[in-house]
Every structure is written in C-alpha cells, then in structure tokens.
Length: 297
Ligand code: UTP
Image 1 (tube, rainbow, N blue to C red):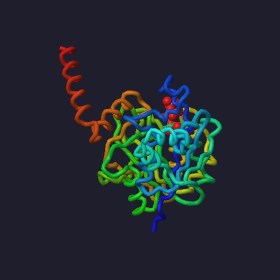
Image 2 (tube, rainbow, N blue to C red):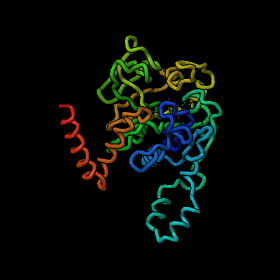
Image 3 (cartoon, rainbow, N blue to C red):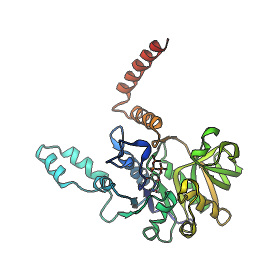
C-alpha cells in the first residue's frame, strides 16, 4: 500500500533571469496570471491533491511569498472599515492553517536539485510532491492529483511528462522510454537538457513530481551537472531500477510561465476558462485577431 502524499515542496529560490526587469524586486513566482500569482495556483493545485503541509524553499528577495500566505491585519482592518466582508472572507478562505506552512532558505541558487535537498529535514522519511510554480497546468483534474493517483497504484516515483519539439530538448529533462501504453510511461533513463540529436525521446518532464524520500541521499552525493547546477534529474536517474519510476502524460495543457510567450498564452487561456471573464476576453480577442489579419494582408 502506497503512503498518502501529505507534503509538497515548492522550490522558489531561482533568480528568474529570463523575466528581468519584472523579477528585479519581485519573485518570479509572484507574477500574476489574470489575478492570482503563479505560486497561488501552485498551492491551490497541491491542496486539491490532498496536500496538508506546504514547504517553500526560498531565497533572498522572496519575502513577498511569505506575506502572500500570511494574514494581513492592516489590509483586513482597511477592508472591514469599508464594509468589504466578502473580500475579507475570500482572502481568509485560501490561507493554509497555522503551522501548515514552512519556509527554508536556499542560501545560493545552486540548482533545482539543491533546492529540493534543502527541504530534506522538513520532508523527513515519506514520499512527497515537488511543484514548480512557473509550470502552470490548466486541467479538469489537478495535475498533481493525477500524479498522486498513479503513485497510489505504483508506490514509486512519478513525474508529469509532455511532448516537446525535438529542437527544444536542450531546455528540459528528457525521458528514455522502456515501455509506453500511451498514458503511462515506464522510465528507462533520464537526461537533463540533451542536444536534440542525442535526445533519447521528445518526452519532457514538467514541474510536477511525486518522489520517494531516498532521493535526498542521491542529491546529497551529487556533483554539479548541466549548467553548473545540481540537477534533480540526475538524482532521479540514479533511482531508476531501485523502485518503480513512471512518467504520466497528464490530462491538461501546460504553460511554461518562465518563458514570456507561454506566460502570455497562460493569461489568455486562464481568462477564457473563467465564467466572469470569458465573453469579454473572447470578444476582445476576436476583434484583435481580425485587426491583425487586416494588418497582415
Ligand atoms: P528555472 O530553471 O526556471 O530557473 O527554475 P529560474 O532561476 O527560476 O529562472 P531563469 O532561468 O533564471 O529565468 C525552475 C524552478 O526551480 C526553482 C525556481 O525558483 C523555479 O521555480 N529553482 C531553480 C530554485 O528554487 N533554486 C535554484 O537554484 C534554481
């Protein structure tokens, strides 16, 4: 029987260089899609997957994330004075309960693997989730819930995977496939950022993982890999064979919000998905596209 997934790690220690200057004084994970920060979606998704404890691996300049998941007495008082009770309720409704959030600092951004390793004492000896807030997934069933369900069946490591164009394999962790039933992929190997010509497939890991705690021992021994960083993918590759390891072609659409174009796409897709915004945004898009078509003629 697989143990339930109760804890999620949110690595938010990266520098967000591709989004400068927006990320100069603000964490990348606080960029908003429509009206919620990326990290807010990540925590909502985790909670919908049954997560009870939220572990953030932060870095310098990330205090806005801590404030976001805390009560703001000043704001509450100001809203109360204006009679905005609904807004007060709204703000309280999604806050994790007392003692449910933990923060640890990654003192240097040495890579995703290092960030996850920084959470080892907070996770302890149980399977856990890792959620990268800059990967946003629009789906019927929350992506992390889909992974947790697979872990419930296999008891092993599970990563969310999606096809990428071959020319982009050098931006992602790529799977070597042992078996593939079209939905679930048995993993034979993993390579971080392979050259397109050498990539064993075009199936890439996205920022959703269910991992066994043994990953911490592997991370502790790792040297720097691709890009001079301690890579999570390298530690995962070492675990293949020791326990079941699957990639799940999840149901849903993924937006890589670390890239500007995908970030803009995410704003449009999430707005179109909302009852309060869909018709106005669709009308605007239609008119925008017809103007564009005229202009291109
Ligand atoms: P990225 O590879 O997107 O890096 O990290 P980044 O620093 O955020 O952005 P760029 O490439 O400089 O524009 C993927 C995730 O891993 C976290 C990031 O915060 C992001 O959520 N991360 C990355 C860490 O927590 N620590 C690190 O050392 C590196």
